Amino acid sequence: MKIKTDPVVSLSLPPLFTHQYAESVHQLLQSTGPLQVSAHEQGMRDAFLYINNTVQSIVKVHDSEVNDSLQALAAAQRLLLAHDHAIAVHTLRRLYTELHEVEQQISRHHDLASCERKRVR
Image 1: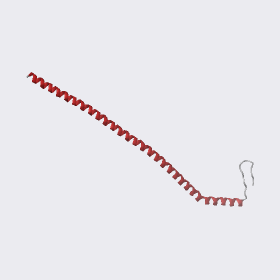
Image 2: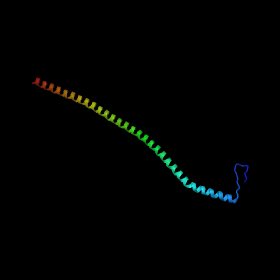
Image 3: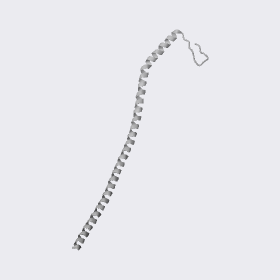
Image 4: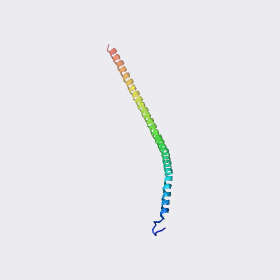
């Protein structure tokens, strides 16, 4: 066994030990293969569940914000419609008042005209 002065360690093994070492490493890798696959699948499942919960909470918050905005928009539309109705009622009331005044003026003019005709006779 030689150890160099640099940070890399070099080990010289006899051929029999090298063969046994390689076989053991190969068996170790084969035995850890299914374990690695299951650990990878477990990690993927955990990541999916975490992301799923995170995305669900984000969507719920977004839905509630959108719902609040839509409710505010509907309330604003109702207020605008109520304002339009109030303006229309006010305008109709003013126009009916003007119509009533014009009808009274016409009636007075007819009365005056009939009085003048009677006086002329």
